[in-house]
Length: 120
Ligand SMILES: [Zn+2]
Image (cartoon, rainbow, N blue to C red):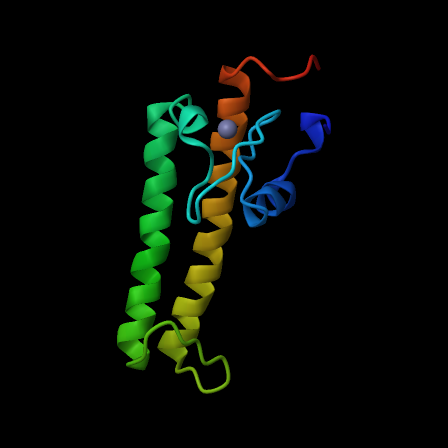
């Protein structure tokens, strides 16, 4: 078990790719699309949970705008993208970074509220 001071977005994404709850000491399996197990998600501050959803919705809205612009679904053409599509791609990438940062804050919040955070 690693010290939580080292825990960052990359470490969180590794946990998510392994479908394991990223909260310290939790080995619960995750369903696809989940950030953490339901027991830990309930411990996250409500305003932080809302923030996670807001950021995820923002990313979805950008992806839909791109799909409308390109006339295709889920296909990103970096080579032939119009200026408008390039802007949407850049916005999507930024939205993803923002989402990951707020997700990390939610995981650390669940850590703290689970009382399993190691002494600093
Ligand atoms: Zn958990």
